[in-house]
Image (cartoon, rainbow, N blue to C red; front, side, top):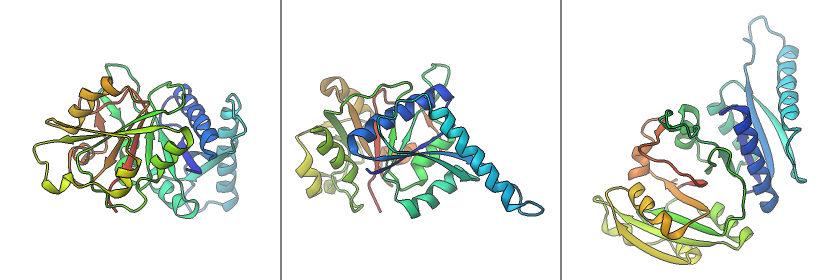
Length: 266
């Protein structure tokens, strides 16, 4: 994960700076570069001057750099990234040219009055981009990742290189991967088959029967005490249903530890 992107402005500034600091600490371990992205509204083409839009881009870049000045960069390369227009359109375009390996996001705040785990923009990034997503709880401090719990319903992984991010984490931290297979009511016989690469990186395996994958995760979190929870974004199953809408409610899913979301299909 050499190129890590963190959007600026999806949460309040204190939370966002804490998120970027987490990304810095992670990038230091992985040897990565961080792009801190913020959108600016380009002026309408009719009657506008290219130099004006160039100035807006420069102002946005300077604003990002000023707000990053308080962080401990730990020698990590951080690039201010002004993006024109809409974040959901700009990030995929940038990814085509620069191969972003990971997007780091924060969920909605932990206030019990806020019903959302992911808001419209964060949820849309999870749903619509092909880039792995790491969701870091509000004001969460970085610590070495030693114990990973991966929750799956099916052991079949159809997307090429889908496991690369988790392999890099396992190698960088010398971590262990514990695999939890949750068998729900729509569990199919072929779901019992396991991808060879997944089997090779798994340290232990356990299965359980639950109404939803989320219930299975909740049941086993206290048993495993993971530093990282990993799930797949698939076209079929519980997590696919979660992102039918762009937002995710806390009552449907919430993680109090870092959550890595991988794309399970092409």
